[in-house]
Length: 290
Image: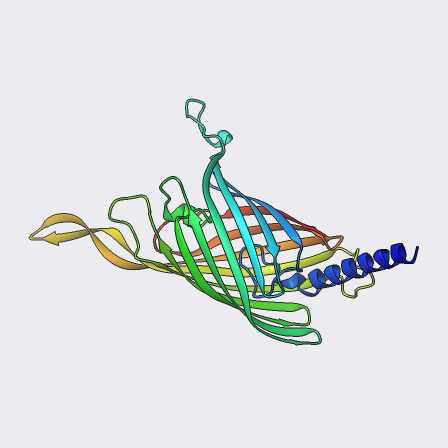
């Protein structure tokens, strides 16, 4: 009997600690970027996400597992499809198609924790494999072919968390002759704030978070150029540096300290490459198994 009671108390204490971990870093659960913090150790997280932009729908299924306090792994499968109701009846509509797979790893390098605040630094690496040619537009939706390495810094003070991310992406293949960038510099500034509850009385309370993320990249690419010589137009391609910047506001609900629901927009602010000026709408759901 004592052994049984001890097991119940141990499981209850473990669940309490896991719920506390999720709530403490709730403002760092950004819909688009990663924070330097990791999830609870030995807990499996599954996330599904769908994004809509123009005539396209992008879908992703992601699994995450924290092996130690400092190291986590994640794997993602990406799909895309055309929306049938956006095309005339004589168009061929594609079914959901597998587009790429991602393996992601993150290691926490530095931690400075204090009551109601912390500072953390992490390094991450990512490998993406796409069986079909990809474009810069699909790259912005996470469908790409290549490797990425970068750093993340996160500061949490009371109810607000701020993270900065910088990374380098080395592509393997892009669609379009003569349009293969030598590499892409990515950066992100993410801010999260806990709106509700104003005071915790139970871990069963619903959390409401607001996020605002700025997602950008810089790369050298090719563009069509027209040169006038002696009154004649000469068409060709030339190299130039492109900059893209998006703002992504989002709201998030955390239910029972284990289920997370995201609703986000991605609005282009600067798009020199003219990838897509359309607003993307994203819906995500994540669940913690503990």
